[in-house]
Length: 334
View 1: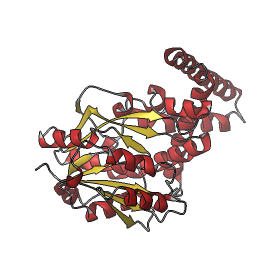
View 2: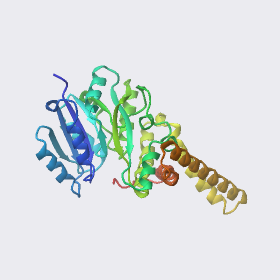
View 3: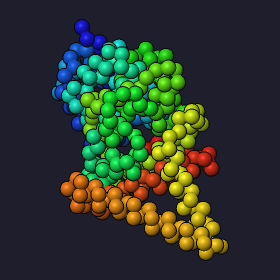
View 4: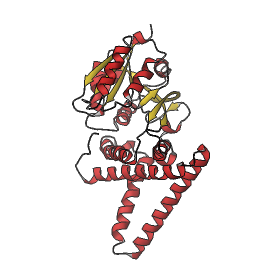
């Protein structure tokens, strides 16, 4: 008898995508009698609950639980789902994700073979809309200028890594670690995996474990997402200062340089010149990235869509990080 698994999913107002996730879970090659889904819903105000209920009625052979997550935060939802889960192993997924049919089977195989304490795979990013901005956002989310050396987005050879986006692990590990840190409203996966590694565990990336992730559809939505990422990254680093990576330090340094030069330029002509040079150089790099991606992908509109998406990621992430550093205020959970 294969191990029982629980797929835990936090969600809030995911009417557009939760059905895609549930369909993908139902199509898993893993035996359904050994699988359950536990959704922690943050009291959604759209049709999320109705979509889940319709799926439950149409697929009685797959057990789907729905737990209320009054906190409406991702780590609180994951903890609520994890505590309710009955499986020997937990697989954390997102309401914006679509796992391949072999996803659960390959996660279990990697855990049973002892490759890692936490195992996961790579993302294939799909646009959240049809316009050139949406396409540019999806490409930026997997571009080295956008995500640095985050290998779970770029693809990589199999081996140990800092983190994976949707980890799978034994339920005993979840209990040993005390679940996710609910004081962090994002970066919860990275923080959980950092504690696992600090405790002597291995976080293992297996490129054969992959899922499609539906990116944000607009620049404002992308900016809100990356502002939260930057804000809560600093909070996570206060718990684990040694976990910072170069890709995480560059955006706040860049934004700080822009702010500093802009202020100094009021008084110093040299500062105005340096600010102009920095902005021109930055725009040229983004333009070159857009042209390169357009030629490589055969998608001419990336010339227009990729540069503003990458710039939004950098400025929002860096701005959120600096705001977290100099203020005690928290961004919204949404």
